[in-house]
Structure formats: structure tokens, C-alpha cells
Image (cartoon, rainbow, N blue to C red; front, side, top):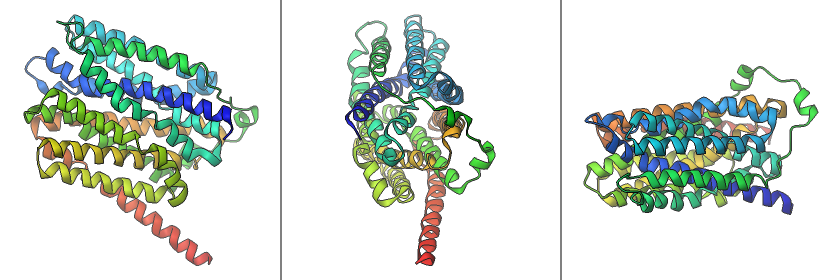
Length: 397
């Protein structure tokens, strides 16, 4: 990569860090805010997190089509502005103790996330096909900063505006959005050429029926969905087990670090071993996370399980993202990326909504057991594809 490309990817990595800090603030504090705003029905405590991912799912396709028309940079700036509006609504709702207003604001923050999730695809536009796995990894590596920054902002600012507990973190989200707008304004992202606009496009169903597309999307869907299912319930489970609020913030911090830390070398691993093997390892790590969770409710179990869950997400999501970029033509980019993210974040929204209900009515054990069948689906598909590839290679030799 030349120096200008590296700078653009570095800036997008910074934007990714700011966006993921916003997300981690929501994840680590939204359920706890809900406990303060709700009455007796605590099963609704994860609804704001569900609103975030629902907003993301609903906006993924419109965001992709919008950026196809006006360009990536304008889309990213608009998305950050939406996030700032959402944070302002959340802040006001905390002041007036309005739970559903808080949920409404959280959905706007999710819409910002929908735009920001295209940083990883913009990195491919900037770096080119030959560097796509590393470009995706380096941009997502920005989330490593979010692992420390987001939960710590939530923890240290929650009492700044007493008696309005947790107002501070949502005012901080506004500042993070403003910083993201500043950074993205310096990024150079190539626009789609006239040839790419006019190139013949295949029907979306034809693209979606490709075995490679199916595995890629399922990997990202299940990797992200399982992570959302377990992580969303984690603060509630920890408080229910008698652990401290500060413990839940720290567990989420290390979970987010595990999600994004490996990104510095995941791209190189994919280049060396291929997407299918990395996805397979990610699914196995997810199974290990469930096993650790089922072994006990000590603080160490939560730490180890959530770190393994973060590693699982990293391999499955980056592997799936890299693999899906091989399934479409340049002219098909917007609609395929939009469909991919709609399916992924639709799954995440469903998982986060189920998470609160499962945790409230059935407990932490059932939340984790619910992840196992999904992970086994990915394991079976990747083993089948690895075996098929080996057979084709042997036949060719």
C-alpha cells in the first residue's frame, strides 16, 4: 500500500474506534439505564440494545444505496450526525426518566452504526482487492481502542451529572460523533467509475445462491448473532450473580478488546490459511466460550468466556466479510453489501431481543445453550467446504 492509502485506512480505523466506543457505551450501560427507568418488568432491560441493532438492520440497505449515490464520505458524515441526534435524545430521556424515549434515541444510534459498518468495505475500495483481508482487519482493529475507551467512559462519567445517573456517557457519545466527522473529512475514498455503474448486474437471488455467499453470510450472521445473544445478557447475568457494576464494565472491556485486538493479524492469517479455516476456528472458539460459561458463575468464568466469545466474533466476522467480497462484481457492490449487512444485523437484533427474555425467564445457562446449534451449523459448513476444496485440489494434481 502507498502512504496515502495507509493514511486513509488509519483514519478510517480511528473512525471505527470512535463508532465502536459509542456502541460499547450502549452495550455496557443501556441495560443498566433501563433498570433505573423501568418499573417491575425487568425483561425489557435489553430493549434499548435491541433498538440499537434494529436501527442498524433497518438502515443497512438504505445506507448502502445512499452512499452509492452520494459517495462513501458523505454517507459517513451523515451517519455520524444521526448518531449525535440519537445520543441527544437518549440524554434528554434520561433527564426526564422516559424509557421509551431512551429506546427511540438508541435506534438512531443504531442507524449511525449502519453507516459506520461500511468502513470495512470502504477499506477494500481504498486498498484494492489484493489487500482486502488486511484492509478489513486494520480498519476493524480500531475497535481495540473502543474496548478500553467506551466502557471506561461509561464507568467514569455515569455520576458526573447526578442525580441524572448515566447522563454523562450519552453526552460523551455526541463528542465522539463530532470527532468521527472531523476524521472522516480527511479520508480519500475513490468514487465508483462510470463503467462500474453501467456494468451488467446479476439478479440478487442468483448472487445469494452461490455456496460461497451462503457460507460468508452465515459466518457473519451467526458469529455476530451469538456474540450479541451472550454479550447483551452478560451485565444482567453478572449483577444477578452478585458481581459489582464495575466488574461488568471490565468484563465488557476485555470482551471488546478480544473482539478487535486480533485484527492486527487476522488478515494475514486469512491470506495464509484461507477464509474457511479461519471461520472454522472462530466457530470452535465460540463453542469453547459456551463451555466455560456453563462451568460456573465465578468472575473468572465471565472473563474467560467473554474473551473467547470476542475472539470467535473476530475470526467469524472478518472471515465472512472477506469471503463475501469475492462473490460480487463492482456494479453489484451496493445491493450485495446492503443485503449482507441487513441479514447480519437483522440476526443481531433478533438475538439481542431474545437475550433479555431468555435471561429473565430461563437464566444464563439457557442463553449460552441457545448458541451451540448455530455454531455447529457453521462448523459443518466450513468442514464440508474445506473437504470439497481439498478434493478438487487433489483431482487437479
